[in-house]
Length: 301
Image (tube, rainbow, N blue to C red; front, side):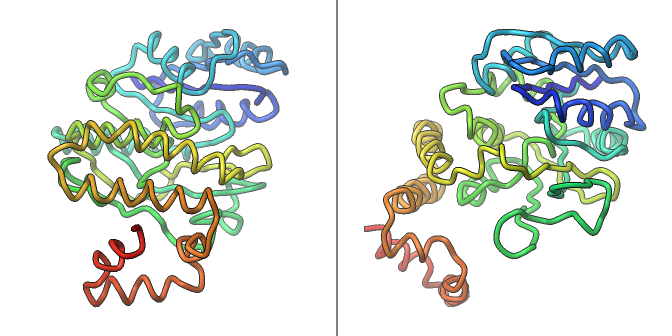
């Protein structure tokens, strides 16, 4: 069984679409756990109406405690051998579970199987409206890493490497890594993924048609407040520091990321450099000539 955990706060206008994308899955042995996090809209009524038609859907309502705590509450009741996390405004394509479970069977060492993401604003099923990113050039941002986490820890500390809706997790790795940290709720997903990497989970990346996670971009996204998100990421990365001891490259990359985020929050001429855009060519030249680490030491003093 696959347990899908969906925290929801005031997403009654979108959550039916999210649930129906799960009910359309070609793999049928699933349970859909909606954790209603103190919504003030019709979230509970919408979910309960669907649950009356399909017993695989359940709604658990609590007072508002945050995104991380809601995911943890979902884990407390989940019965599946595999775990899928999904936001209440996002969707997944119909063959995601079928394909990813097949890849688990073919790769028994895998703890996490994950794929690609597409972003949309209006019609998720119109390929012309899908984007590879919702920021900057429309280019793939995922590094598509596979293998044991410790092999690529330093690399993925430079920037997020997957959207939380992309992976399917074995329950055993979720239990090993532990709960989401509700103190950094806005970036607890990245924190959770990094803890899986630090735990040396085996990640298997694939890019297969009809398995994409479809992420909705709309005015209520927390990601549209960059100062807040960067502040939360700084807190998250500081929490990681004790887990990185003994890995000098990982410590350096995490330290540099914290310094870079701090500069972006404070604002300076360095903020423009860090944001990329017209300066990306300088970064590429430094990387190609092997001068990137020297430049980092000078830049982050």
